[in-house]
Length: 628
Ligand code: F6R
Image (cartoon, rainbow, N blue to C red):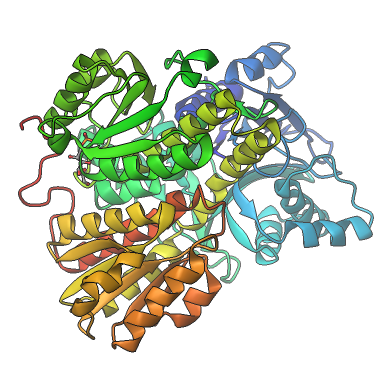
């Protein structure tokens, strides 16, 4: 589900299609994946025979496993195909569930990122009509729908359009097919990104412009609802819900090697790009770390034995700003799951409050940059006082990672926008994994619950992607617009979502310069309630769970005083109470901060953009605060 490539090269060219697809997949590896595959089609120009058939190679694990299979040369001699790196959602990572998928006739090969929400219903319908399925994936349902229509119409673009009109969900999809000697390569987007380009002697498509750059610098980004029909040297873009044959214009973006333009990948700001990168960050942060069978995790560099983890009697978390908010979430996770007492301190306070470090204390420093002066100093002080030290950090080789005995790298990639977004979610993921490891080592989480926690984590990515469609982002922009004249904002949350209220308020104030305060929902009645009036907007984060009804009563108190409410989260009762609603998919309470924060990031981004603020470089702020 993670990375797509597709290409059609003119016959007689020097490049081999399998090499082009594999190279494309290699550039997409950073997104995280658990299996890969390619499917090609020989066009057999001049042959008397009718259709060609697809040939597919798929392998679980690293791309190297796929390359090993390809050594037998069985996919040579083709000039059009699609490739995929998969992050398993429906069906375990396995050769059979890897993409591409084909239908019973073997005339098409299809790859897909995203999720088909009504796949079960469609699968039952197809099975009742005699269709046999070879995998557990939602993707195969789409493949069978396309394949059946293709068998009847002989027109791949029309068949994909028909199939997509039956599908609920979000997707980037590419499909190659041949019927009666006519080859077609088609792709479509509703959610996950896709970009396309014509080449002098071909055409190419991919999830990320990085895969196109070795071939061309002139690329077109598809927008939600677009489908594209690619042929060597010619691309036509239509709307999925439009009239067949009616093409639409999309701008061609020239990617020059201005690093900034290239790395923004068509997004107007780094902050927005980084918000949209969060599903990939999740993939990278958990890739190679999960042990699903044992219900446990393993960190590559953190080097703890279970006995050492058992020796930890107390955790002191030290951080600043957004990283501190991640630290507060970590407190709920470690206390709740591993039953170890945790304190969270502003690094700048810890340095001067004469802290007490008892035997068995772990000082856990959290930092994106690994260079924040206060965090470094607090961590050094804790070590001098006898604590063991560990970091959750994004920059390998930074001062913090060199200073700390142990590190969990967050793998968020370079974060350029000053307002931290993807680094924050990466810190939350690291904290969740660490709490799980601690709990497993100490026996507070058994194997069954460990497996459940991993399963929930694996299902988080498609849920994150649901929050990162153009449509969702636009709906949040519309809400931001309705509240553009508010004189201030109050963010309320409780339990593990209390720090998300803090983070939502911090994001808004730092990039839009409007006053915003984050508060624990239960504390509102002890003071901030005096602020409530029609000109002050309150965003309430509420997820179904232990404190949902308590948070609902805070909403009632705000409403009773005429304060407008934006209800954020999965709790349906709260949604009924809000003037504006930002729905968030349901997940476990422990993982809910990872989803709830995304609409708050988008809200801040759109609010600041509507106000015309300099989003990537807010006034008075530096990306890394290396002075006290
Ligand atoms: C806010 C933000 C800052 C940083 C803080 C710590 O969006 O980015 O609050 O979180 O300055 O920085 P790091 O994580 O680099 O230690």
